[in-house]
Length: 323
Image (cartoon, rainbow, N blue to C red; front, top):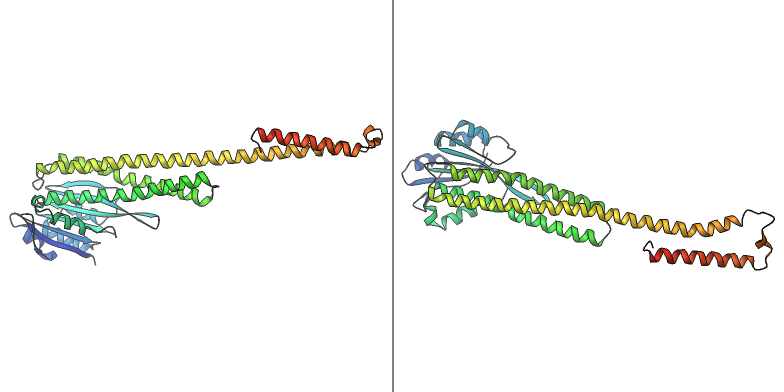
């Protein structure tokens, strides 16, 4: 069983009264009135009830009962059906809550399939602006779309902050698997945000072109404002995607550089250790005729030669940055 978040009737920019679902069509039929119904996870019976009352198209109801892959706008006669998605990020996990909007002459119905930010604040803001709410359904439709668009901003800002923090962490410390996996996860989240934001550009553009009885031409600048916000959000997400990609490239370069430094150090120490090993190997061959073997100070001379050679190699590698 779904939950009715709110159901009310409005006239001349003011709330007339709260209503039940069964009273919706009667109020919507009155001139100068419109009903605004908000549902959460409605069941097929509730949607069928609304379909009978407001003559909603059967294809719109079928769409409302399905899971969609991206936002969209469809027209059914003089009515609109819009699919939107609101991002929800909890403990680093990004999810999208699907909301269906039915809009027509005398009614606005929202059906939210999940737990996202409440639309109650949208209703309160609309009721606080009676001069604009007097426009009716079209202003409510704008307010809903604007609310959905704004919901992406704090999520993208939080992801941006985490990417910057990881960038500073990676620059100053040794790489670890958890940081790399986290960075890749954030980049995937950015790509998912772009996939859901991009269609909203088309939706807002189409709303400016469509001609419906319940959409006043004077409200089109408001839908253009939604388009501007969506376009700006797309630009921000594109920049954020590039930042994430560049950070990943930087991770690869840093890891390659650190491995190169480590390899050079190993090579330098191998060369240093090879010198005394080679000298000791020569004098460990036990040939009979080796002049240095009969020299009174031969042992100390060889040790001194090894020390000078090792010191020279160490100094040379140190100057060249290999140590």
